[in-house]
Image (cartoon, rainbow, N blue to C red; front, side, top):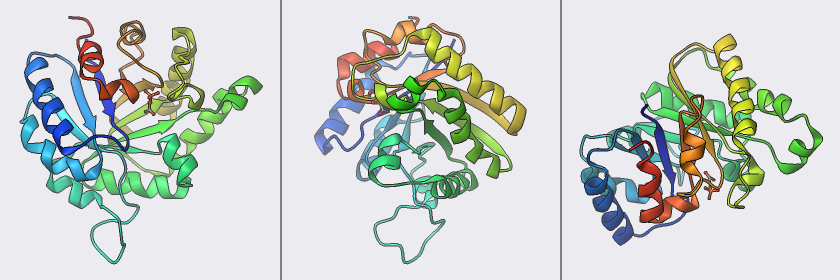
Length: 244
Ligand code: PGA
């Protein structure tokens, strides 16, 4: 079964690393059956685009402007600009953007609308903090985060990544039953309330070459969003070889 494997480089990389790593992946993953998406810093996307060709290795941005099109918005990059480089996905609502840059629901909805208007698939991230998990009401919290999506009338493709904040960059990974419980709740919500052509549900948080196969073996988990381990070619290639 084909999965969606997303590398989130965050604010890491260099021109050389982009060229070397992606050339490596193009060779190494030539016959790979999964869709592999590299979410790179904006400035590296135009370097990466010609390296990847038209196979199942694709590009994502890690964010997008809340403003559509063009205009006097210093420092912003719009979905129209991403489309020019054939960027197919964009991460929206990563917990680092919500917490460090104060992004709220209003911004996230507008970002998703802009992406959809340009046929770019949003990778919408959500997940609870440790206190919320400990308090036991994490499913209610996650449904609350999903309710934002009710403001959008129709999706073509949508990717939702469950990324518990307590697991990002910590080495703590929920067990499969915990991940499946949350993804089933997300699935029930989207099936009841959203209109879409295709939806894929990912898990993210301390995914590595060591634990990815176990996580990906669950049918409800359509893929993984990989942070730290996506910077290590051996580790990430290993993840991409799931099922082969
Ligand atoms: P991590 O990050 O794999 O380093 O935990 C995942 C993410 O933040 O998307």
